[in-house]
Length: 271
Ligand SMILES: [Zn+2]
Image 1: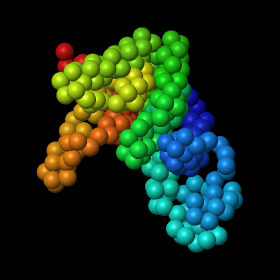
Image 2: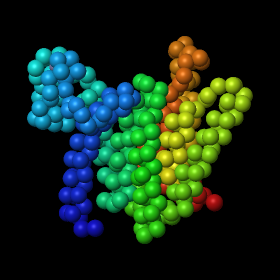
Image 3: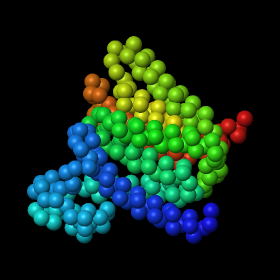
Image 4: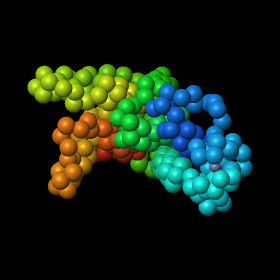
């Protein structure tokens, strides 16, 4: 694609990413509480004042207002700023690493969903179905689009993922997690994985294709183990307390979106 068009397109997408980051804060707060995500419009949780558009500009408004509500001067949680910042960085990495394409847009959107999963699952221990459905929709678009254009190109190389690999990824990942859940239930007589984890991993398999999905499953388990070992070493591990696995799946999946095809390609080239 023409260089200048590519740059303008990416800057435009980056701006959309900024706005989505702002919207993510709404999702993270309202989805677990079962609230409507469109209304009422954003308001200060402390004084209930409606937030004007110029006080709702991603990243900037928080800095301009010094992290306080314009009306009551109470503090706005730093998390709002943090989520917007991390989201735009996640998008930036995708846009730098991949050529402007349906795949790049899909990866960027999924990275926002994954960020929401991290916060919602860590805080509430659930992964809302609407997030899993959004990821599945991106995977469905990839599956169909790959029939016409299987190449994913960018700084990490050019890789072909054909349509059935997405389907195999979705079905395989969900099935594997379902088996793990069943085995754990059989042995320990309680849930190890949640239904949300199984659905999320299935949806991500559809986005990643089966090779990167396998890598993601392995990585998420490694990350979770490291976390549990560190918690245990600090004497803070409570075996009876439910443990949110979603954040580890999310982090692994993001890395696999960026580098999965490259790493599995390298690995397969060894044989
Ligand atoms: Zn206020």
